[in-house]
Amino acid sequence: MSNTNIIVAALYKFVQLPDCAKLRDSLQTHCEQLQIKGTLLLAPEGINGTVAGSRVNIDALLKHLRSDSRLADLEHKESSAEHMPFGRMKVRIKREIVTLGRPEADPSRQVGTYVEPADWNRLIQDPEVLVVDTRNDYEFAIGSFAGAIDPGTRSFREFPDFVNNRLADARTRKIATFCTGGIRCEKATAFLLEQGFEEVYHLKGGILKYLEQIKPEDSLWRGDCFVFDERVSIGHGLQQGSAVLCATCGWAVSADDRASAQYLAGEYCPHCHAQNRKTA
Image (cartoon, rainbow, N blue to C red; front, side):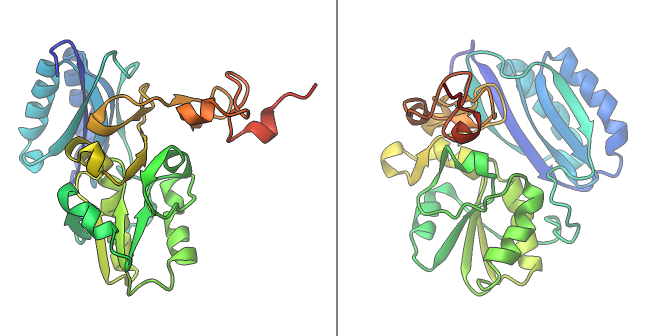
C-alpha cells in the first residue's frame, strides 16, 4: 500500500456508551481537524462507522478513539482507495449502531461463536450447516458465499421476520452467518440465540477480513462485496471491484450485468429493466 493511497477504515464495537451524545461534537471536530471523511455512528450500545483519510491521520484517529478505556481494544479493518470515497464527515447519534429494533438482541450479553477466516470454508462446506447472509438483497445481488441463503431483506429490521418465516424449523441446525464487517452478524447471532437457536456461528471480521486473508484460488466467495461508499464494491485483496450503481434504481450493477441486453446506462439495469425500459 503506497503512501499516496487513501486508507479506508471500518470499525465498530458494542460497548456501553451512555454519554455518547457528549462525545459527538468533540469527535466531529477531531475528525475535521484530521481531514477525515466518512460516517461514525454513536449510540448507547457502542460505535460503528467507516472513515477515510491519509495513513497518518487515520492512525491518529484510531489512537484518539482507543484513548477512551472503553474503546481500548477497538478493532478495525482497512482497505484503500485511489480517491476519497466520501464527500464529508458525519458523526451521528442513533438509538442503535446497527438498527434491528429488537432490544432483546444484546451482543454485550451473548453472541454466536466467532469463526476465523481460515476456518470458515470448512464450516460452510459442512452439508449440515445452514449458511445465512445477514446483509440485504441489493448487497447479496453482486456477491456472496457459494450456497448462502439470501434473506431477501431491504433493511436489517426485516431480519427477524426472515428468521420467523424461513428458519422457524431450524433451531437445532448449525447456523453460520456472515456480513460485510461483522457488526450485523453480532446482533443477528444475539437475536438467534435469544430465539432459541442452539448452535450459531459468525465470520470474525466479516467478508472484508475473509477477502483480505483468503487467496482467490482457495476462496468460496463469488462476485464482489458491496460497500457503502463511492467505490461501490471490492474484491479479493480488498481491491476496488467493477460494480457501478444504476442511475435509476440505485442497485449495484456488475460487469456481467452491464453486458446484458437488460442494461442501458442511465436508463435501466437487470433489476429495474421491466419497470423502467423505454418502449418505442
